[in-house]
Image 1 (tube, rainbow, N blue to C red):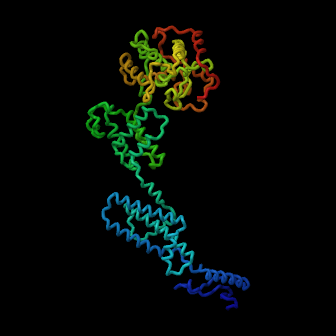
Image 2: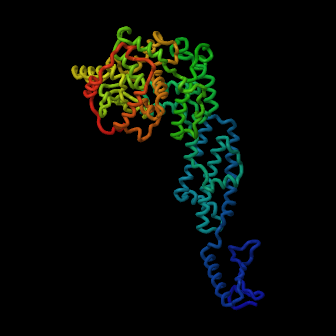
Image 3: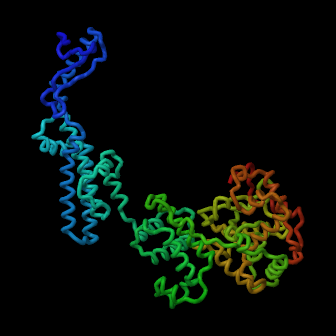
Amino acid sequence: MDVSVKNLVSRNGKYYFRCRCPAGMRGDDMREIKISLKTSDLKKAVSVCKLITGKLNHLIESGAANTMTLDEIRRILAGYISQDLEEHARQMADYRPICPDTRREGMRRALNAMQYYERDRDAGFPEGRSVAEGILQNIPHTPSDLNFMAQEWTMAQIFLMRMQHDRIAGKRFLTEYNQAIYDEIMSGNYRSADEIRQAETVHTLGELVEQYLAAPHPTWGMSMREAVQNALTTMTEYFGADTDIKSLKLPNLTSFRDNVLMKLPARRKIYPGLRNCSLLEQVEAWDGETLSITTVNLMTARIASFFIWCFDNEYIDRSPAAKLKIKTNDAPSEKRSTFTPEDLKTIFTELREDRLNAWKPHKLWIPLIALFSGARQNEICQLQIHNILNVEGIPCFNIIGEPEYNTRLKNVNSKRLVPIHPVLLQLGFLDYVLKRRKNIRGNGSGDKRLWQTLNYSEKYGYGHGYEKSFGNFLRAYVTKDKKKVFHSFRHSFDSYLSNKEPNAFLIQSLDGHGKRGELASRYSKAFLSDMLATLCKLDYGFDIFDVLGKTPLPDEAIQKQIDELPRLTGIITI
C-alpha cells in the first residue's frame, strides 16, 4: 500500500525508499533505487525517507552523483598507456642493435622525463590537469573527476617513463598495459628517478682508490701510506681503473689473491728486469721467491679496509673482501721466536763497549731497555729526555706520542707509564739520561732526543736505521734464525714474565698490549708499585752484570739520580 509521502512505499508491513534513477546515473542494469528502511513504524519510515530524498537531491544538484569511479578513469587511461608502450616498442625495434652511448643517453632522457612528471605531481598536476581536460572534454564529468584524472595521468606518465628506461636498459619488454606493474607505481612503492640514477651511477675502482688515499687517515705514517697505496695500486692494475666497484665480488678478489698476490715476486721492485712488465707478466715469468702468506694477508687486510670505507660511504652494499685472510696454523707467538738465555748472554757480551766496533751508548741501552721493559723498538728509539720522569719517587718511561717531536704510537693502548727496572738503574741508565740533559741545556739547542745519533725519517720514524744495524749485528754474532729479530726482546719479556706473574693485566699494562679499560688508564703510586713489583719478578737465568762486566750502583747513588729527574705527582691519566 502506497502512502502519501514521496518515494515511500510499503510491502508486507515493511517500508522502503523507492525512486527512479536520475538520467545521469541510469545504466543498463539499473533503472531504479530501492532501499529497505528496516522498520514497520510509519513515523520512523517517513523521517528516514525524507532524509534519503534530501541527500539524493543534493548529490544530483552538486553533480556528485555523476562522478566517475577510479576503475572508469583507469580504464580510459589503460588505452593511452598501451598505445604509448606499443609506439615505444616499435621505435626500439627500428633501432635494432643499440650502441652503449645511445643506450646510456636514452636511459638518461627517460629518467629526466620521469623526474619532470614527479615534479609535476608534487606541484599539483598542472600539466596533468591540462591533459585531463582534453581527455574528458566529451565525457560527462565533475571537477573532482578532472582532478582525479590529472593525478592518474601524471602517475601513468611516471609509469611509462620508468617502463621506457627499463626497456632501454634491456630489463622489461612490455608492449601493453600491465595492471601489476602499474599498481607498483600507483602504490608509491617505487624508486624515484633520483634513486634510479644514483643506483646506476658507476663509481670506478680507480676513482674510489684515489678518493680513499686522499681522505684523512690520522693513524697513517708515511710507511703505512706507501704500504696501503702499494696494495691498492696492485689491485687496480689487475682489475683495471675503469672497473665498476659494484662488479667486484668475493670470487674476483679470491682469484686475485690466489693467482696474483700469492705468485708475485718478493721485493719485485728491486729487479730491473721486472720493472717494465705487467702484473701478469711478472707472475708468469717469475720462478723465484714469492710473497709470504704474512705479506699477502697484510695486503688483503689493507684492501679490506678500502672496501669497508666504500661501504661506509655507500658506494657498495656490502664488502666483498671480508673473508680474504688466509688462515695458517702458526700461532701469533710462533711468528717471532724468543731469545734463549744463551742468545741473550751472547748479545750483551758482543755489545760491550770493549767488544763492539764503533760502539755508541744507544747500541747497548736500547736492547737493555727492550729486555727489561718489553717496549717496542720505535717506542725506545723515539724517547725524548723529558720522557724519563720521577712519578712520586718511581722513575718511569712516559711512552706517549708527541707530534711536535715527531713521535707516534702504534695504537691507543700503547700510551702508558712504565717503571724503569732496577737493573737498568743499577747499570747506570739514569747517569746517561742526566748527562744528556746537561749537554742539551749547555748547547741551548731545541733537540731533546735521548739518542742523539738516531735521526728522524718521516717514513720510518726514529728506528729504521737502528733496526737494520741491529739485524746485521744479530746475524753476524748471535744467530741465523730469521725468526729472531729485535722484536724477540718483546716476546722474551712477555714469555719470561708470564712464567712468574699470573696477572695478565699487569703484564699488558707494562708492554702496552690489549684493551686495559678505564681503570687501567689511570696510574697512581700504588699501581705503579704493583707494576714495579711485577717487573722485579723477571728472571732470564743469567747475571747481566757479570756478562757486561759491570758493578751495580749503590742505592744511595741511584736515589740521588732519581731526585734529579723531572717530577710528576698525583694520579696520572694517560
